[in-house]
Amino acid sequence: KTVVFTNTRKWDGQDFRWVTSGEYIQMSGRAGRRGKDDRGIVIQMLDEKMEPSVCKGILYGDPDPLNSSYRISYNMLLNMVRVEDVDPEYILRASFRQYQVESEAPALEAQAESLEEEAKAVVVGSGSEDEEAVGEYYQMDRQLLLAQRKMIKIVQRPEHILPFLKGKGRLLDVSIDGEYYGWGVLNAYKYKAGAGSGGSAGKAAVDAGGPLHTLDVLLPCIDRHFDGSTDGDEAMKEDASNVGLLWRGTIRHCRPVRQGNERDEKLKSYRVFTISLSDIERISAVRIFIPQDITPPEARVGVAKSLNEVIRRFPEGLPLLDPVKDLKIKSNEFEKLLGRAAALKERITSHKLTTELNDEDRATWVNSYGRKVDLRERSRALRDEARSSKGIIMRDELRRMKRVLRQLGHVDANGVIQMKGRTACEINTAMELVVVEMVFSGLFNDLSVEQSVAVLSCLTFDERNKDEGDPAEGLKSYLSGPFYKLQECARTVAKASIACKIELDEDEFIEKFNPGMMEAVFAWCKGAKFVDVQKLTGSFEGTTIRTLRRLEELVRQLANASKSIGNHELQSKFEEGSDLLKRDIVFCSSLYL
Image (tube, rainbow, N blue to C red; front, side):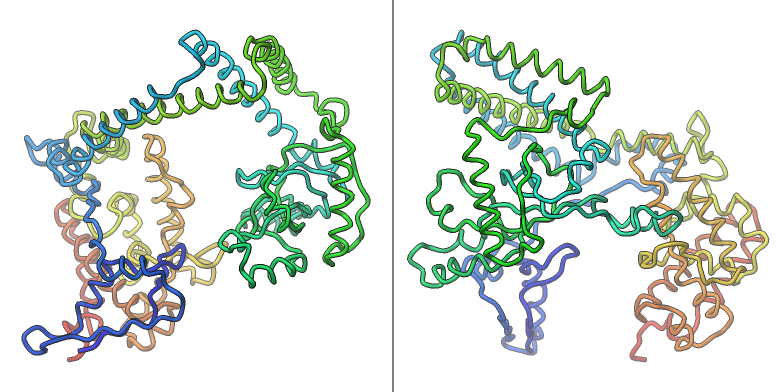
């Protein structure tokens, strides 16, 4: 009769979010039995503040949209190829996904037309001649910016920049994730622990993610907490008086200070951010003294005063380290970029927009032209998307899949299905190409029934490997050997797919095969009880049961595939494996019986 929501947020694999209207309807609809209860009761428990708009969206919002997840599998493609006069492209053309994509085309074209009209309405200068001149200036400015960005990337390389970052007090110009924080003071340089050691320890440190070189920099910032407060708020005033006590800053909690904003100047504080080398825009030749410990508020205030005094003394800009004289950069690539940047600066300086307009008017004209270019580019992208939606979706993917089948020997050059292809037609429970490679490589010929079933469990056990290193470590040799051969078969399929331009990461593809259930499946086939088998796994009972059921279906399909190609020895082996799997509570029609 009653459904209770103990929480209105759920984990979606990336973050905690509010439940959607569709999820709420699905779960709350179970309150009350149709024909027996005149009503159902839904209790929603709240342990945090919820905005009225969020609550209304959950209770009265639209149901989740129905979007097609249609895709082509190799099994589907081979079954269409084996039937005469069946065109796979016809199936794509008649799919619901094709219908959805085509139905979006008119709306995309309308958006493109609207953006085009908006671009035409943007006025640049006083006529077409001015617009042409602004276009020249705009293109040169963008090319100069691109050249400077490439130069910054070279300057940011560790071999050039690290010698000037080992000591405290260096002034650095910093941007983090596209947000410009301005000049800050270097407090510490750190190198990832273990990254310099050899062997597996060093490799593990490098593969762990994150930058190898990090810097602690004292930067001016505003706590994002203040963006939702008003100046008259008493709580805000109290927070502002205590903001200096916080010394660690992150981009999630702190934003840059807006120049010329009086409120930001009052709320500004200095905090230590951890940045990477790629966040450095410029390096000053100036260094200032900073205390050993800058976590106390008075220490950071003193450093901030020194920084502001240096900036005041150099109104034309802080002196920078010269890339050639100081950083000793001597690459041909950098010299070409330096020459290109100098030539562009000279042309921009002599351009009529620079000589005839003041800074304010020039910035207005250039910004208007930039907006016009942006609108036209967005319009062009929408038209291209609308044009592609009118064609057959996944056509390129279909052609690449056909090339993979030819390369692996499932079909010949004329598209006639071969013995490998006839085998793959029978497999749809797991990755059919890998399973067929295992069969035709002779992997099962020398294995017992229990070993064969155990190695096939790697294709039906979906949980990812949690431990780094060799996933088969700890397995007995009679199980690890077949698993390594499975990896070789999977690598063959991955290389063929990559060669045929299918987007695939070879290492990630190999890591999908998890041997975590091999020992448990081997024991199950030997007649062990389910309670004893479960002790050999690190998963829940439901996962074990689902894996065994899918595995039995795969083994049954392999028996049929072996029969279709006339391999009676493999057929009898897989039929026996199916009989060993299908027993006890795992295959009961109901767990309540």
